[in-house]
Length: 191
Image (cartoon, rainbow, N blue to C red; front, side, top):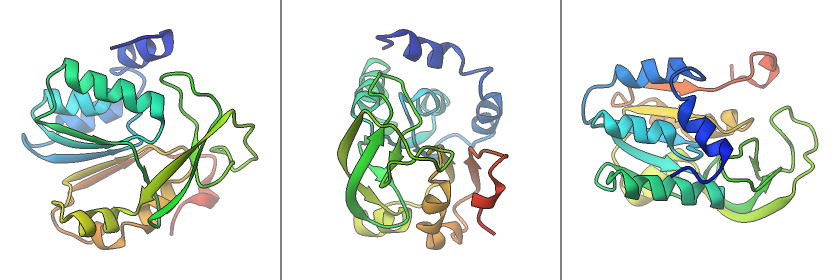
């Protein structure tokens, strides 16, 4: 389901824009569990499901969550993908999700702060009241299976996601993590 040019581009660019993510997913064992944190419209969630992997997708943007859900429906992947309209953070809290734009398929939003991925003040067009969980809390509260793989693409809040996953990161069931980082902002990396 691609209702605008940006969503069409996301679907059409999956194999060359982030080919390393495709290669990573291709190395999963069938039936592995992927957590797709910052799923956007779900291109990687859908790709992993097409390879018979189970997926939990997290996308707090209302428009992107709609596209993600519609694509799960259209592809009949509701038996493989569970999608949640929540943010993943270092703590479980109610706060705002700040969006530069609400265009379907857009990115570069931020949970909890009106700053962009560069750490600069964001000129946001909309803020959505949103619930967030840390990874550890989400697993503990809902008694969930530890993921085998975690993809983190949260445009500047990667450290917060990792801080909220201390227990999960130590679990032997977690095999791999893929994190999208800005290599020019090494001061924001965890030690």
